[in-house]
Amino acid sequence: MAALAVVVCCLVFGFCFLCFALLKWNEIRYRRKGLPPGTMGWPVFGETTEFLKHGPNFMKNQKARYGSLFKSHILGCPTVVSMDPELNRYILMNEGKGLIPGYPQSMLDILGRCNIAAVHGSAHKYIRGSLMSLISPAMIKKQLLPKIDKFMRSFLDKWDGKVIDIQQKTNEMALFIAFKQIVEVESGQIYETFKPEFDKLLIGTLSLPINIPGTNYHRGFQGRQRVIRILQRIIEDRRASSVTHSDMLDHLLRNEDSNYNLNDEEILDQIITILYSGYETVSTTSMMAIKYLHDHPRALKELRDEHLAIHQNKSPEEPIDWDDYKSMSFTRAVIFETSRLATVVNGVLRKTTKDIELNGFIIPKGWRIYVYTRETNYDPFHYSEPLTFNPWRWLDKSLESHNYCFIFGGGTRLCPGKELGIVQIATFLHYFVTSYRWEEVGGDEIQQFPRVEAPNGLHIKLSKN
Ligand code: HEM
Image 1: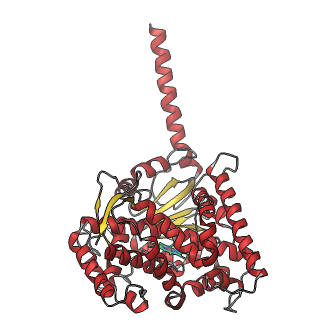
Image 2: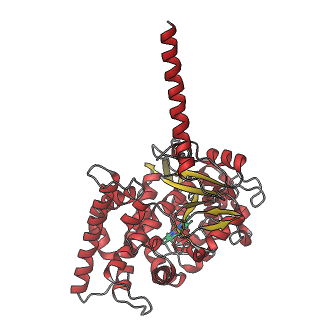
Image 3: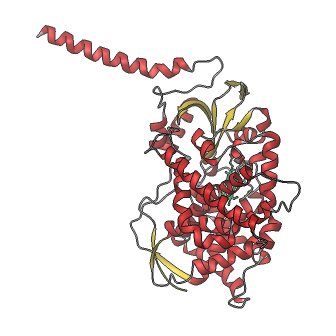
């Protein structure tokens, strides 16, 4: 009996010792002088499980314990989380001081080495300049808005009386509309083949970089290869033909803007960037706008009145134009409030290229910095009653440009697709609210973290307005 007790004691002691040793492993491995406080969790996994499971609450708890700059180990990397708005702004404004984008390896691999997040300094300036020449306000006004208008009319047609999953529809809408702007004529015939491959690519960008059959990373690469093959075939056909098109691909191939003369690899990665960056952001914001408008009839009425006023001054076939878009001030406010309250983007990632000092702490070279901006969206100092959906607050235009509004990022990486994204969502809302009324079928849950999504879809029943 006594012998058994000794064995049990030894096992318990051994187990406790093992747990203690494992918990200390990362602490010792990443121990450096001058690091911010915090915990590093388990070997390999660090605190990823707690982060993904408890998300915002994990962040809040760590902040309460260690302050607004703390160390952790998440998503496979030693990471410093910054929840200090002033410091976040400093990090976003100072890429040149050793704070480059720090997106996961899987993302950089699958989006391509000329992808905007993979390039820095003058290369970034060049790729970004080329992108801006495709999606600048002047291009939106002249070329993109008419296409967006045409697409939305036909996309939103014939939904009367139907029950639809608005998450699925906004998802299709966001990819197809970007695809149409890039390859207008070919998009119709090849979209059905293209979408599943692009979706594989998308999932692969957020996976463990293990390239063996069966992994999301492997499938992501296959998706990328097929996407590239489809695009290359279109490029070859276009080069062999004398017909011109007024879309982004033609603009890239004809080097209309002599300042930016991209080679084929850069063109392909640029196209993938445009499709990738505007996909989930635009689709989720559109879905959440429908959700919030459904739940806030006064806001819906004001939005609908704004669009009916535009609609009533037009003949049925007349598209909305830049002046109409500019007059949609309440719609813009709804889009900003939706992005803020839903927090479609929780933060952005940076990586240090050398040891750097932040708020008196030393962040070692190669560490990730998670510029966690979610909290700022709910800061009562900037947004009174922050948990209330109140689009009216954005009618004060200065709110969009205040120092701590990070909805579209900031500094040299400020979202170049901001205006394009807003135009797409505003046009979608225009045709949606002027054509239909809707009721939620009910019971659909919405998850807020790590991404905003309705796991079983968001089903609504539509009737003609
Ligand atoms: C509601 C819609 C959108 C939101 C909320 C959004 C948000 C953001 C944020 C927060 C960043 C900063 C990333 C960082 O600093 O690392 C960003 C960057 C970027 N966005 Fe958007 N975005 C939206 C729509 C779009 C669209 C439609 C495009 C289409 C081209 C786009 C293209 C990009 C690109 C290329 C970057 C990287 C810029 C760079 O590294 O210089 N975005 N976006």
